[in-house]
Amino acid sequence: QNHLGGGKNDDGRCVLKKTRGSRSTSSFTRRQLRRRGNNKSIAITECVTAKTALKEWSKTEKAIERGEQVLLFRKGGINDNNNNNSGFQILENQFVLFPTSFHSSDEGDSAPDMKKGDSVPFSIVCRITRAWQTSDKSVIKALEKFHALREDEIVSRVNYKPNEPYSILEVRAYVLPKDEYALPADVEKYGGCKSWIEKLPFGIPDTTTLPPVLDQRDWLISQSDLKRKLEFLVATGVEIKELPI
Image (cartoon, rainbow, N blue to C red):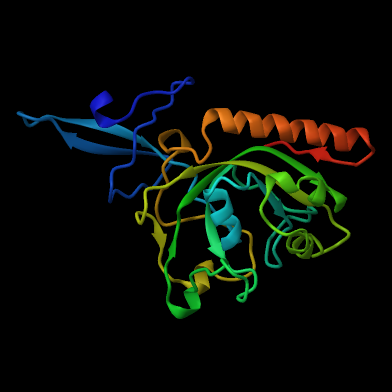
């Protein structure tokens, strides 16, 4: 397996890299590879994430890609079907970021526009490591070390349905091969104010096969700092509920 760039991780799952140009149709896709020097073939299992995308501001995607942000602040979209549950719903714990625009005038927030026929490239896969829910907006300022957005930008998002809590997602980001994954323009299928796109037409490599934005040392430091900050907020009376992921 080593010559294929793969192997197994600690729980025995395969971690083979996705071959350029292949298209997966399920979480585990079997391909036939011909052995050199004979006519026999072997089946190779490729691992992919769930075929899901989360719509997020382009400037957030870029900040995460630069290693400047490890948190997402979310409220459900207008067209989300939350099954009568309040707040943002976590559908998958691994997903690609689908870049969208916040305000067209914002510097550094330009995003592809499907209405103009633009395809949407994917550059980042995120894995949720921890998640919380709160209604206290003071948390946004308190956690400014862990995100690169202005406080008023996040408040503008969480003000939607102000009586409902908002969610905070700690995500570890991984880098996709450049220019290999893009969603063709289809406003009817992918447009609208909804948080999730649940059925991408292709598979995305599992995060175990991709390079992380932050190396292990920096990631563990970030997690430890965030944990201490949240414990301090709870100790001072801020109501923060940890969510299952």
